[in-house]
Amino acid sequence: MKERIVETSIQLFDKKGFTGTSIKEIVEELNVTKGTFYYYFKSKEELLKDIHLTYIDDLIEQQKVILEDLEKDCVAKLYSLIFMVINNIGSNRESARIFTREVRHLSGKNVEEIRAKRNLFRRQYQELIEMGIRQGEFKDTIPADMLTFGILGIINWTYYWYNPEGEVSEEELAQMFTNLILEGVKASS
Amino acid sequence: MKERIVETSIQLFDKKGFTGTSIKEIVEELNVTKGTFYYYFKSKEELLKDIHLTYIDDLIEQQKVILEDLEKDCVAKLYSLIFMVINNIGSNRESARIFTREVRHLSGKNVEEIRAKRNLFRRQYQELIEMGIRQGEFKDTIPADMLTFGILGIINWTYYWYNPEGEVSEEELAQMFTNLILEGVKASS
Image (cartoon, rainbow over all chains, first blue to last red; front, side, top):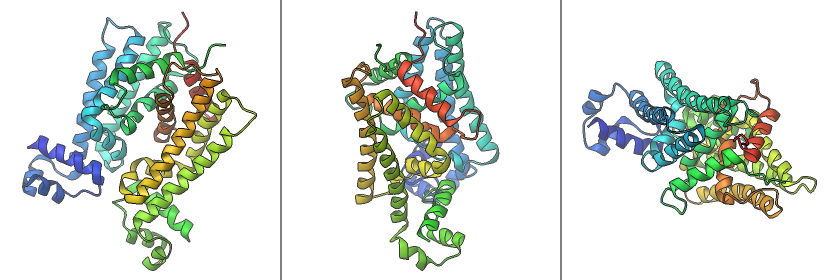
């Protein structure tokens, strides 16, 4: 039941916004009582935090597996990290959009907890960049922190436009973006 | 007065979300009557459309000036387009966030009008890429439409993290991102 509450809420939050969705609407959609809702969640904010946590914990876990892969150099890891997010879109697009839009409705300890995890996700990316620079795979022209924000921008934006059922496959898109980040677009003169 | 209604609403929408903000709250914040609100806007959605229009029309206009500049090659135009958005953050961060988050609350003709302008903004970027490829300034390794989405991602994401008052100046950040897009990060072997 907890899972069904979460899934239904993700759909409603994505369509009507967090503040635009009431607990009443959630339980009516599921045909259960408010008591059922409060058995699993103390409040609507608690539920929102749960959605955020599930989403970011999953990404951090996948990211860790890639970063610890001893078979891959930094270039290969970069590709895998990009593919990982693009590959997530099909199943988690709504959660991702809620993650970007609704974090401002978390308060106090909730927002601190989520922020800490967001920062961890970003820092793990940055560590890959820094490792790549140390090992001579990447240039050190651009500071690693700023470069990380640029790469995250490319990736995070895909949730707003990319259609996994469209003409460009997930693998192709990940290849294109890896190519952009590694090689750039300027023609050699 | 119209301008004051718009400014106050932008602040409230950014803080509480579009659906979380009532016309009552807007007019109370301004200490005016609901009649005043309805003199300028038919509805809350009409106001939201107005915010979207002002924001995107302004960007399209600035973009056009840069693209039509005969003194600049495509590399220089790319830098200017990136700087333009970063330079907008200081004054328009809230509008930009509303633009990303709240478009789903526009319906019918309103959403069509805004979508058409968003697409125009994107296509103008894409035209620069295509021109750069034709003129031999850019490689044609990555399809122009996908490359455009990548570049827009880098830029649009800045609204979520960049602090113009921080250590990295707007010019420096624009330089770094132009460098990333043009040269890439892979060390030459």
